[in-house]
Image (cartoon, rainbow, N blue to C red; front, side, top):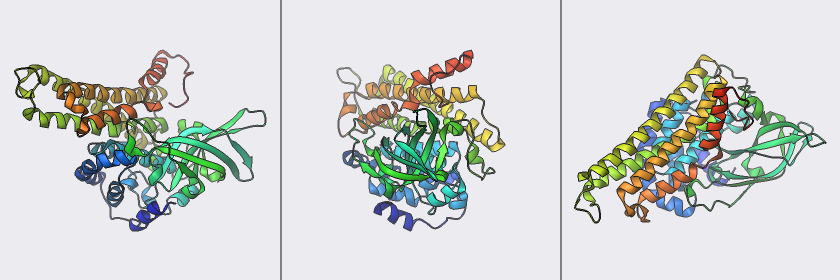
Length: 406
């Protein structure tokens, strides 16, 4: 555990009285002015400002998806989207850190209780992870020894556990199993590799492990998890019955929804004071073309919200009933993810054009929102082309040869 994570954990380790998920969303909304204030500096430093992280920890928002048994709030997928969207209105990179940390905490809630006890020994434990597997592993008594590099681990600069993908092979190179593995942060190192055009504040650096032993209870078979087979013994906890890939994909939409809302609000607020250059319009609000552009952007953002929250509600309700989602629905939800994010990036392009070339001034939040959104939109799980092929195959009853992550 790094010193910063340890100090924050110590300060916020006392369980709160019962707090509603609605109250947590209000806390996230209240942080927007501070996140806006720190957004440019967070981007410059290529990591979320420590003031942001401290305030988010104090508000309990890193505990959103931790089981109540450990002082967490055991949130729903819908609450996850609401919190990360509210934070995304202030700083997309910071919201991304919180979204990815919370989902990794949720993944941890699927592990055996013994692993959960270790990770959640403090209710402010924070986990950062990457699915992509390292094949540099070997079986030893009681677990695996692994080495590897895992790039783009969002939140790793503020985490005290790493969650990484591992593949186990037999002596002939045939795959035995693929896992998610939990490793304490003091057993890995972090390589500074995050130099990007957007999402700089997420600090999504590289995890490096060399000959690290991972006991069996800190290994979760990811193929079984995709099928809804989780090793947690706490089967009565509805939040940890949610479908694995729909949760994994849809959490990527939360910060995007917030960035879309922030851009729309900014352009509308500035419109009465801005002329349209080289025209007779002294105010953008007087232009019918501008009015139409605002409507088109707002409709895309609204449609993105409707689709994201419909899917989140379906996931939450199925988990509450203890019923698995069928394959076709899961495939649609992966496609939903790509569509939601595409709608946001389309809306941002419209808003950038409507607002004008001033959008690209360094002093304008529009250029940062645009870069952050478009960078995050290229996350592999969010790519519409891949998701649409998976969904199309499911609709047509054609075998999915694209990805097991559905």
